Length: 369
Image (cartoon, rainbow, N blue to C red; front, side, top):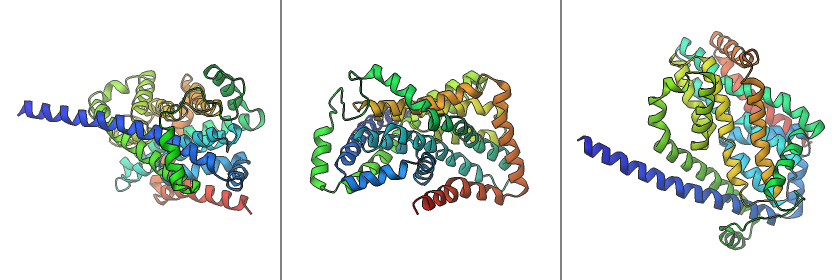
């Protein structure tokens, strides 16, 4: 019986590895198809894209709303990398959108916490854990967005770093340092469909599907048993939790998966809110690998944007992780929000609707008038 179970586990793992490789190939192809589709869009559509993202605050909320709607910051950031690579969006315009995607991705952990709404004590802890991810990203945006808008802080640093990866000095334009192996197929599909907007929609759907398959297969192959077995080891100290959060998320390509694993642990008092915070910070850095993969074979601007995504989360970690006093601020805010929401549970729904949907939508809508 044990041998049969062991054999089944091996077969399941082999299937997961195969699915993982196929999903990775699909992801690279989908990103390349999106780049081709964006480069074929006519000038009017390209101009509309540029107009929408010219205001950095509107760009931020577009990233937030898109991520909240499709529930995948990896899809949004990878798609933005492809748009920048096609030359239809400047790096400086894309930076706030990536920041917004980081906030939008925190919706999942907040939604997971709502599943505990019938149990007061569990709901208080779960909502606090869900809020941690929100507060950390919002605080990081509040610090870094003004620096980016007024000084080009992230974009200038990332361009300087990106120079090391590219032979050319200029970071704009279709500079390619290697030929994408999927390019002939991407060009053939784009020419066959012959409607760039339709090709763009198809490629975004493929990006989303690839990330979901990749996330599920890696989760089954590496995380599901490991996470339960080494639960106590993960949260033993601040830096251990940070490292595990980073590596788990890099493996499954989704911070929403790993942070959503933490919410039930906090709800059931297996882990405290304070100990869960470094894991969430690590998860934020781990998720940046998606943009890095998307930037492979692309322009220097696309590579620079992938670096921006990493720098945003890395600087956020540098601000909060080493200093216990600063690290306590998001924790205390999250605990306070958990207590307030328990007193009036409708507040949880109101917070989610306003933060992730109503406010971004209204700001984007009125900015177009």
